[in-house]
Image (cartoon, rainbow, N blue to C red; front, side, top):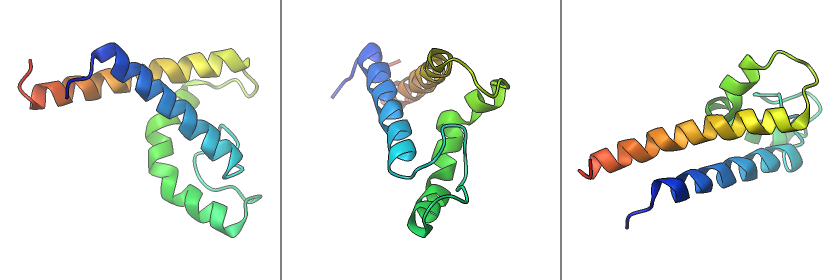
Length: 102
């Protein structure tokens, strides 16, 4: 099944937003934290530690680029959406190349 590039990028951004909301609401993790934080319950710290590599790939570069301690909320979202778009385009290109589509 072929998925267009635009649809793939939109799905990737939606999944990134869902992942960010889940880590913030379910795991009680601040948006700028990459690892477990001391204020979490034991199961939340375990889940945060297991999901840390995914969080580093999805949000790490944006968090390291952004040095302002209190940025305006749209700026963080726009940076994350741009990063997720680049990741999605690279993954889509690799998958289409693997299938031999070009």
